[in-house]
Length: 219
Image 1 (cartoon, rainbow, N blue to C red):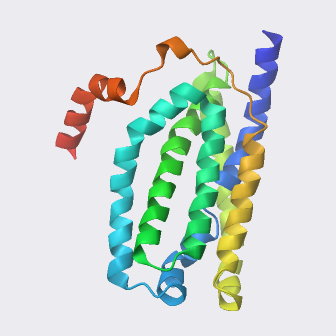
Image 2 (cartoon, rainbow, N blue to C red; image 1 turned 90 degrees about the horizontal axis):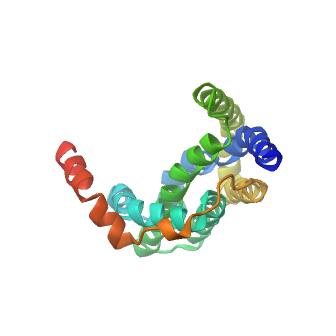
């Protein structure tokens, strides 16, 4: 019991710092469009097409992402997600045609399919049940505040870096992702993975078939 309490406190203290660096891609989005147009010579139509594929990829990867989280746990899933985000940035930097950018967006969608589910769940596991809701919201707010401060400060330098070299902002973004990976390794898995209750992708699709149909009707 004492070990669980210690692990929860560790996660709760670390999470706002982690979220500051990893909530989204710092430096990248401010220059992504200009980078693809000027540096990679993609047309506006090509960029809009690749951007339109991103939400489709996220829909496709949502259930596989949940299955990975169930099988590997939240901490390992976050490590995989952040590493995939690093691979996304590397692929963007070495890309030279639209197919490479589509592959990069697929990798990015996979990364956030894991992160968007595993991050809040890891935090919720790390706060007390009696006051879980209040502590969860407070820690999330602190993490979001830290991110916005950091994003606001770095945004002032993004344009200058891009003028010097179009790849510099992405390299700095990759550094922040690398920091996120390092912070993720310090998290503790609160609850053991119950392997006998894990579901395959096929089973999960069948279980959620009705919810998926309802969601698409709503959309």
